[in-house]
Each structure stands twice: as C-alpha cells, then as structure tokens.
Length: 330
Image 1: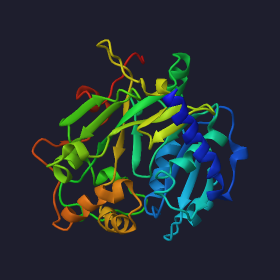
Image 2: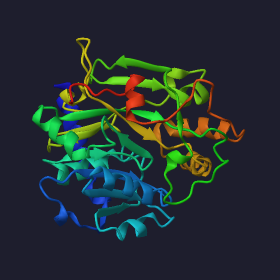
Image 3: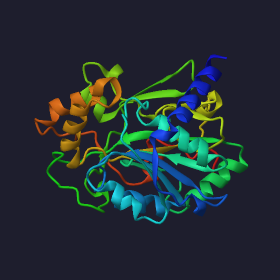
C-alpha cells in the first residue's frame, strides 16, 4: 500500500504540473506504434545536442520528447528545427519539479504508454550487449518476447587522460574521443529493501570528490529503458521506478540478468563552467552538494586518471569486467 501511494503521488504531481511545460514544436503525430522513444530534460546543452541526437538516431530511436528548462544558449532553437524532436519549454524550477521528473513523468504518461521508452540525460550514452551489430529494436524485441519490461544500466563515468580542460570539446564531436577512460572496479552495491533496486556507488566521483564520505557519492544505478504503461512512474531520477517489479532487474539465484551501461560524458572541458553555473543556481539535489564538491576541486585542474584506469574498448570489454551482462540474450 505504501508504494502504491507513492506511485499515485508521483503521477498526481506530474498531472498537476503538466501546464508548466509549454509545447514549442509538437510532432507526436509521427510516432508509430512500434517507435522507440527517447525522453530527456536539459538546460544549456547546445554544444552536446548534435552528437547526442545522432548517436541515438543511429541506435534506433525514432522520436525524441525533450523538455528545455529555460536555456539561453540556443538549445531550444536548435531542437525546434529537428524533424524527429517534439519540444516543450518551461521556465519553472528544476528543483521544485523533483529535478525534472514531474515533467518527464507527465510526458511518459501522455505519450509513452505502449512504447519502449529510453529516458536519459544529454551526457548519457546507452551501451548494451551487441550494440555494435544489433539495433535497439533487436534488444527491445527480445525483451518483449522474454516478458521483460525494464532494462538496467550502470552509469559509467568517463574521463580524459589529462586535465579536464586540456582538450576543448567541439560541437558534434564524439565525447569519447576525449573522455575515453573509466574505473574498472571500485564500486559498492547494496539492495534497497523498500524499492527492491540495487544501489550502486563508486568510480571517480566517489574516490575524488567524496573520498571522505563515499556514502554521499552519486548513485550510479539506473533503469533507463522501460516498456511504459500509464500507471508507471519514476520515483527518483531513473534510479528507481514503480511498480516495484520494474526494479527487479537482477538475478538473486547466482545467475546473471542482461544489463548495460550509460557512458557518462560529464567530464569534458564544458564541465568547468557548467559546475560553477549549477552551484550558483542551487537547483540540483541536496542544494547542489555534488556541484559544490566539483567546484572546489576543479579549480585545481585535477586529473581523474589513475594507474588502474582503463581505456574504453567496447561492450565486450565491459562484459569481461563484469560491468554489463549479456544474460540469456543469444
């Protein structure tokens, strides 16, 4: 009963706040019954958008539903020109919207039902087993025929070999030409007893920015891909969803369930200014505590690379390291 009430509360908030997002360019009539949808909310991400859209188009996303949170860098104008993007704009508080989830839950409720829906940030890039040879439709078809409704992906922080500001990121560039390294281990996992999801922390953000309090490090567990139904809702970002069964994406009997990662291209040259802006705005979780930690250390031009860091080589490498799993997908 408690989780049902939480789910209804999340949906109620989304419905009450639906007028906060005003349509700028609606092309939802182009959505077909088999279209895989991508949902995102963003602010001032103009330089990232060309590669982000291209990456997911090549993967198999058929339509993007995006909320622009009062960008002033041309993001909205760029998105408005894209024929496969439906765009909404809001000038209201990101923090007051439960960090954008009220807006996205509304769009998922209104347009996502019956579709496989991928919900990501503009700096998150989905990687799954066989993604180099099989489109996203192959994965979702197998999930559907296997009776699987949700797919997990650990957030894998990527970083450059040198200082973050050494290589300027150019519009349209593959961010992993610069941020090509990751931590192969150093991850902590425990189970959330209430929601049933795995809670993962660690990686470079834990060891560098939260070394003295790793329990406060950002969560890395996400469930970004779900075959959506109208009574579903995300609770906290895409870390967990309701009903609770959507979070049970692992095998408790000693086997392996299929899983992926979200390559996280946060640590590029653009991040230095971004962290200062977001710290001043105070619109992120815990009064932007994470960005305050970033801002303090970024002033020292720190380097995230360690002798244990690995250059990214593809999904098979991640499977060998135990960071993703092919599970029973043939």
